[in-house]
Image (tube, rainbow, N blue to C red):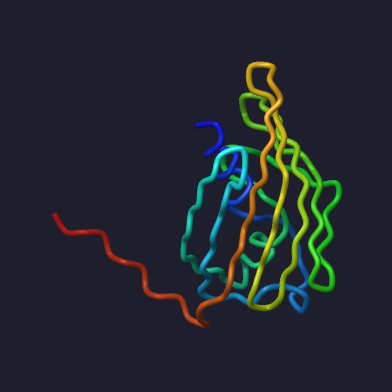
Length: 146
């Protein structure tokens, strides 16, 4: 469904530079991604965020389906402001505008997204809430033996 793709676009990964002093800490994190409207969906995942991935996590929704640019991107003093556009490989455009807060161990972002489907404007509200649950990430689970 298109809404699920929009949710994935907004909340699957965050990308861009951030100052190490004014950023989240690396470690084991639990992230709750929600589409609040027009339909409700929730996805909770636990993930390891390495030092090298901190900036990518913080600085602006993007994923493998969409390339995103954020002419307005501010992460300062625990406040987040984003405004930009994402485009799919097939030419679909999604406007993104969000605000939130962060600390060394928390991250909250709420955003509006707007696009068109078959000439009909569609907009929605999405959010990400994340908190650090540990210093050390668990070892990866080996694949089942056949």
